[in-house]
Amino acid sequence: MAGSSREAVIDYEFLRGLQNETIVKELCVASAIASETFRFKPPYKMADHGSTENGIYWIDGHIEHRELHIVLNEAVAGFAHFYDNGVTKCTFLAGMTGRPIHNLEDVNFPPPDSFNHDR
Image (cartoon, rainbow, N blue to C red; front, side, top):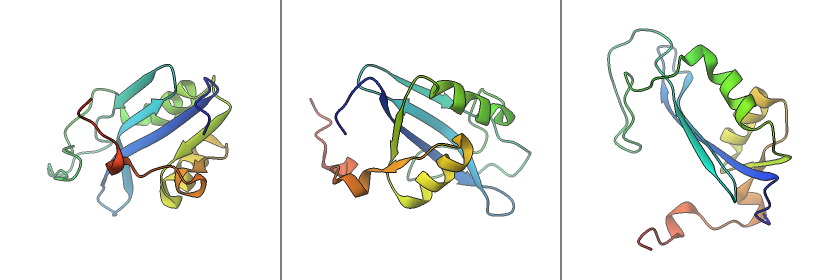
């Protein structure tokens, strides 16, 4: 990934819904020049639960979940190439955008836990 303004990394955090489906709760689009994060309300009522891994809870969010597809596609409209980490996430996002999402694992991008976040 060369880091051009035409490339973006898309990532999301999710919880599991009533049918064990993926419910996107937080979406981030980051490029060399900017990043945006969107938090989505739950799509339906369910007992509050969360993730100790990502700190997100079912009741979190301020954007209607039904807007996820629109928000995602508007956020990536100006970019030509997209990346995420892992086959499952790339496949999910490709289905939502109708565009190829390149797997960072395939381009030998260092894993996120290898970055120094103390700078």
